[in-house]
Image 1: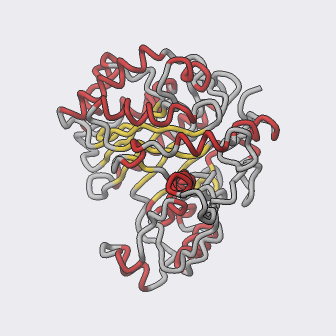
Image 2: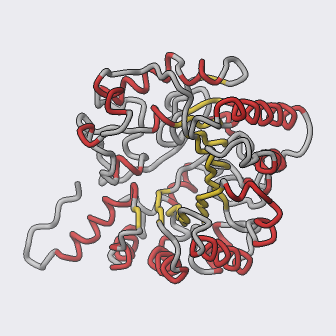
Length: 392
């Protein structure tokens, strides 16, 4: 049975099962600000619109089948979410799951000095302009079947659901033609699958022309296995708009990769990563990042993963996050993968891995792994006879 997104959409507290350890405490965010609800729209399965990753902020603001984009963008729910950012409660956010909250990397309101400064000052919740960042996650087609994501490969190539999403894609192209010449916008895709396994997203790529949309910039979210040199060359002029690539890898060895990336070729991936690094070297990409979703199957690869990124030389960021159960695991299976839980039999070994000095690299973004790194360092520095370090 393939991954069913219906357990997520339509609920403020959806069926995402998480096992946050005692280190992930809610933060005081009264002086902090998050830009995402004011700048970002994510379109997910069933065409529901979110203003953030649904596992971090699981409430959607509306559906594009029922309303126009700007109506969704300023829906009552979207306004309430923005209000929660203004008042510092962040009520709609999962404080434990959000890597920016847990990493203490949300900016202070007093640090915001661009156009959002007046929005903060006036507590504004209705926005007159469209989102300048859109994450297109409405096609979950993928060439891999990773255990943390789905139980089988998913492909949408024909039928009513394909037709519906292709219409949305064509409508989006028409919308971009209307406002992109004068309005900067970033497109990110695909957060739910792989863009190169999706005929819908490939159609979008091949129909974005730098001649009429010079203000568009594209971030590709991919597993990297299909993004080869030949694929890049076949994309044609749209590569002028692609300035950022984020590759989800989750491993540093072929043995671990075969467990967490079902259907992927480690050798093909390494070859494609080298090609992407060469694009970054030539400054044809502005950023290249590698992602690692931490779970029991792969946590021992964390230091080697950072070393792999360093060996590529042109990787800008190594992004870590704790795995979320998207419905592919039972509670018992997810408990086995939740290596960060203090009751996990390998929790001590997990902390030992996090003591590696490689994690000190400024290119490493620990996200919701940060408090565990701090715990690991505190235990390393603890001397016999002293009181035990705090666990908060």
